Amino acid sequence: TCSASPTEFFAPSLQGLHETQIQGTKKNMSGTLILVRHGQSEWNLKNLFTGWRNPGLTEKGIEEARATGKGLKAAGIEPDFYYTSALRRAQHTLDLMLEEMGIDNVTITRNIALNERDYGDLAGLNKDDAREKWGEEQVHVWRRSFDVPPPGGESLKDTAARTLPYYEGEILPLLKSGKTVLVAAHGNSLRALVMAIEGLTPDEILAREIGTGEPTIYKIGPDGKLVERVTL
Image (spheres, rainbow, N blue to C red):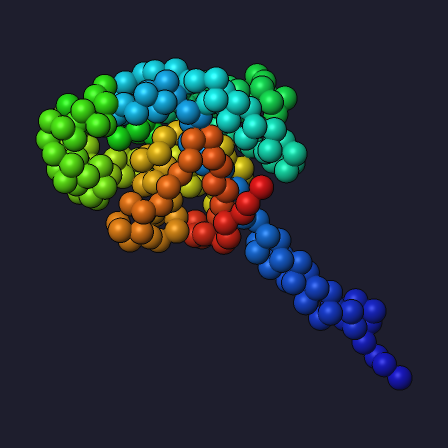
């Protein structure tokens, strides 16, 4: 005859089940980060160095932003928080995406830390004209080296030095708690984030192209590390 009470008899198995459920919940509590480069700008179309200058979107850029918004909606993605830069091409891209997603009356955080790399004296110049003025090799070094800035501007290393602390202080804690965050920014500020998230080398990130209007989606675990990269 079993002398154990029903509670005593079932307690070990119930406890094991409870622990399994908790572990499973922790494992699945990853945050989602959506990084989107702004749609094509007027200066992208004209082949001009843009940096912190403030051109608007082209018709193609508007279409790219809307298409990404539709894609996110179709994927069932509903962000909890929204971030963008202090530049209007990124802000407009985010506004268009939200319109397509049917989202309004939300708080959008705009911060200069997410701005494009500052191209300094190159800003506003046609890239071909810059090559004629400084030479093909020098302009290539300014554009594609990790730590050599153009005159009066920033390198990718400099851009990362302002973008990453902002991400780690403001955005990463949200992701670690399981939230979904949408960031509309720029080619080089996003490169800095991608480099850190994916653990890429300077050479690898410089070879990475991030297309206008293109989303990059990550699952980030409670430890702040990459779980997986997701495609729409």
